[in-house]
Image (cartoon, rainbow, N blue to C red):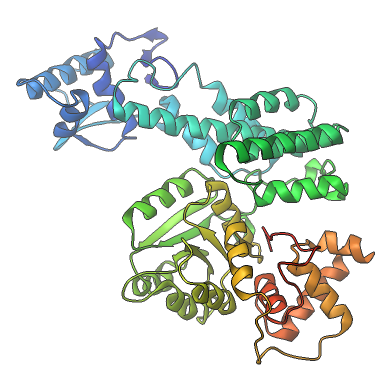
Length: 491
């Protein structure tokens, strides 16, 4: 049995002995096959990627020589004419055949992306995954573009593993030990909002409320200085919850702790996502984001609204990420037809803004939120999770844009007869308050608020809180100039 190591200095081990894989370029052939994850790599690709720019005249025979020597190193007891079992021929090139557990990078990725059965299992798996790292991934091949790309991808998964481990520990009530690690993690990666969320939550649970708010202030300053952005919806909600000492921030019961990665589909199943966008570059970027997030699975891609409708019928996704402007049939028309179907998926619109009328019409059609195509991956993931949970999430920039365009608009079809308590409730929802915050404001049980919001939506014939906000601005119940109105981040 041969095991391969890529999470640190590259190498292979058999029977406890490190194998002699030859010079660096010969090793690079094996490393490139490892990066392919078991898929075949054409010889032409190996030549282009091992000698960027100007391959030697005898590159083909050189590659064949490298493969022959690597096979002898990996399978020294193989008979001369016996077919190779590890580094195999796979026309028009070669492939690496190995079990997932025998390649440290494959094993690591499998552990990080696998479905978790609770915080205890997650913590154990993340500890195992992170223990596989012995240094920078694919060390020794930094000058090769494909190796740099793969090393960057693996390091992104490593950061996810660090955060999943900390989240699992917090769910198990192990607060103190994770604080130093999270301090170092947030300092080293100050643009990762999840790092700041976990750190602030850990500090709060350790009885350090001031330090928790201080961590969020540091996060806000960093995001503003580096990107010109405010805190994302998750951090804004956490900051408000810390200020009012919300009960849900307390240490949960480990016996009922859920999966670290948050809600998936019904019964904890993987969420099936369909992408609809006419730009291949956008689709590729979204696929990378989905691939890096446990619990999400891409089930199809569409280039226009007609394809999206057909794929919804055949693939039955849970969520559709829909570009609002596409050729042949635009995203708005496609969303209307999809949402009019039986048991439709949630639809999240993606925009670079488009027209105000389209934004407004899409909300009224029942979409589960808006995200900018330039949004951070965390914002997109949060929108998907919120949609499946039956809520809606609007990017703050989209909301501000929408409010400015439609504040005070009257819709003659809007129902009359709202009571004073109904109006008070609508105003609080429109200001971005959660059910818990509304309950504290009105001094009533949280479940009572939830029931009243549900009844209000049903009575008005609305789908979700996003449409309730539209109603509030249509009727002039809330306006962007009101002193008690803040920009909405989540609904």
